[in-house]
Image (tube, rainbow, N blue to C red):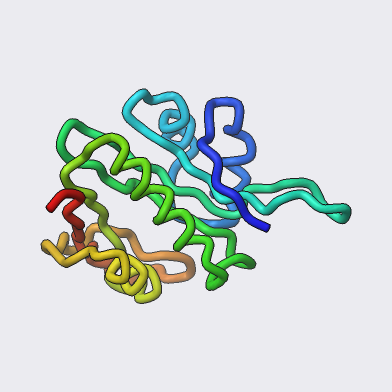
Length: 159
C-alpha cells in the first residue's frame, strides 16, 4: 500500500537518503531549503508499513508555488519502485496542491532523453514550450559526452 505525505524539515534525513538512490540531481542544500521554504511543497510517496518492514519513502516531488505559476523543481523515485505508478501518484498530488494554490500554470523541465517522464507528463496534459540547449550535465560514466538539452513543458491549470 502507498500513501502521499507532505514533508517538513523533520524529514530531511529520509529525503536525503531517498535522493541518494533516486538520483534526480538535487543537491543536499537545495533539498534542505525546499523543506523549510514557505513557497515550496515537498511531497513524498511512502510505502506503508507491514510486519516485515517499516514505512519508508519511495519517491518525492518538489513544487514551487508562485502567485501565477507553479513549477515542479524535482521528482525522483527509487529505482526498485520505478514503473509501478509512483510518479503518477506524485503527479496527481502535485496537481492537487497546485490547484488548491489557485495557480494558473504548472511548469517543468525534463531531460530530452527521459522518455518515460516525458510520456507521463504528456498524459497529464503537459505540452512542449521550448528547449534549453545543453542545460543538464552528462550523467554517470559519460566523461567527455555532451550535455543534454532540457525540454520545457507546461500545463494550464485553469480554462
